Structures are given as C-alpha cells and as structure tokens.
Amino acid sequence: MTRSLQEQASRLLATGFGTGFLWPAPGTWGSLLGVALFVLFLAPLDWRWQLAASIGFMILGTIAAEVAVLELESDDPSWIVVDEWAGMWLSMVAIQGASGWMLAFFLFRTFDILKPFPAGRFEQLQGGVGIMADDVVAAGYTQVAVHAALWAFGI
Image 1 (cartoon, one colour):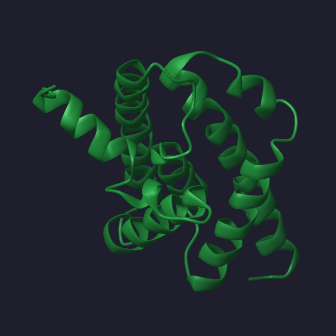
Image 2: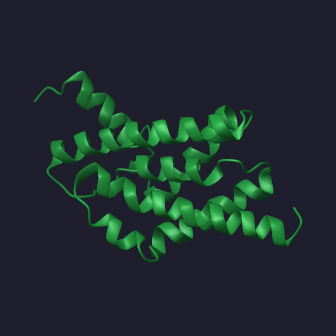
C-alpha cells in the first residue's frame, strides 16, 4: 500500500524522525530530540517566540499524531513521540542554561511517566489530542517546578 505524502510526513514527525523506534524508552529518546532541537533553534530566541514556536509545534504534532493513529487504528502506540518533543519544548520555554534544561528534562520525564492528576485523565481523550494533552499538562507541571527550583536556589 502506498502512503500519501501527508501520511509519510505525519509518520516522520509523529515518530520524532525515527526516535520513536529506538529502544528502550522511546519517549525518552523523543524528549532528548526535543531538548537538542530547542537548544539549537529556540534557546537563542526571546521567550515569546519560544512559546509561539512551541504552541505551533504542539498543534502540528497533534495533527501528525492523529494521522498516524488513524493509519494504524491504534490509540497511542509507543513509537509516537511527537508529544514528548512538544512537551519538552513547552517545558523549556523561558528557561536558560544547561542546568535549567537538564532539570526540565528530568522533571518532564518524571511527570510524563507518573501522570499526576489530571494528566492521566487527559491521556484518555481520543486521537492526537489525547496523545498530546497529557504531555502538555506534564510540561505545565515542569514549568512550575523548574521555575520554583531556580528561584529557591537563586539560579
């Protein structure tokens, strides 16, 4: 069966350029890709541009995940990692420096895995929205925790 260009592009994006196929822990690989791309392309920008790019990517990633889910007729396959990538970008907005980025990475992965309330409920939404929503909540928790830690330790 031949895939359309949209399906191919969606699958490429949904898999985080293939990082979703890396084992173990494809979500961690997708998150690491998110960190690397944020540092390379978004970190030099003002936080408003970082936020705009992150929101835009979250929307694009939701669409890509939706197309991939419809193609496979599966709820949330582990190889879809665009949500981790977008979650990392949202987690890193307005955070500067390697120590802040590392803290954001570890906190985001923790919140994404544990899914504290209400993240687990958002994951139950259908399609691309459900795939992306719990990671957006995890990114919100990460933003609060990182900023609180940076403030508390005077970093």
